[in-house]
Image (tube, rainbow, N blue to C red; front, top):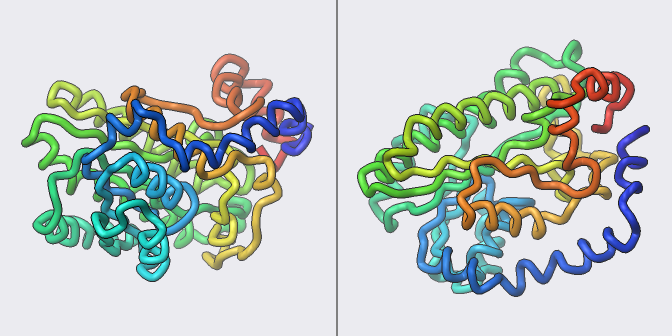
Length: 298
């Protein structure tokens, strides 16, 4: 059974319902979400596209004050112009591929913005190549962005949260951080690593009023595949086959927001059987390993 077959096992009615209501999430945030996010200062990394841009739109509609970061400043400006109350939001260009430079850049930015209530670590890069064909430099680059850049960002924000006695750090990992699959060895490793790191950090800072959370999306209909790296570190410039079976970034953003409101430690975000993949791996590891051996698209 391949990925498209798994996706099609959902009923057409369920699929139409989920697609038909996704834009509603962005246009009409619930009153409970508005009450929770209104006037909070939220820093979103990877905010120039996909899930990050959808989070920016949703949280701005909830009345939050946003700080948007990415390497792509012009795209960030385009996103910012579309936001509710766009004059209230700030842009701070950052490159998570250079984690050693982040603390100084972040501290400088913090001088000109309110204290951070919520940090959403969303920046990342994908991969699509067999491990044997991936250069070690590419493995390192993926870890720099997805793992070291994320922990550098978190470490820079965390002291101010601890000093105030409250705060939330939400890190967007992936179902690939729960179950490794073909052609995603380094990507999966980076996402496994960040889940383990955040699990440890959660245990360390809970008594200081800090909530550490992780979101694990499955297939999401974004263009991340175009920037996914091949074995030589070059962008593939093409979309993955599974992208059409993913949820929209708007739906993903709403579910991440719901997890923030509920202060859920870890949330799996997907639809259909894909949501069950981590559970199947945990309860029936041999079954899942066999599926992974014969399927490149899980």
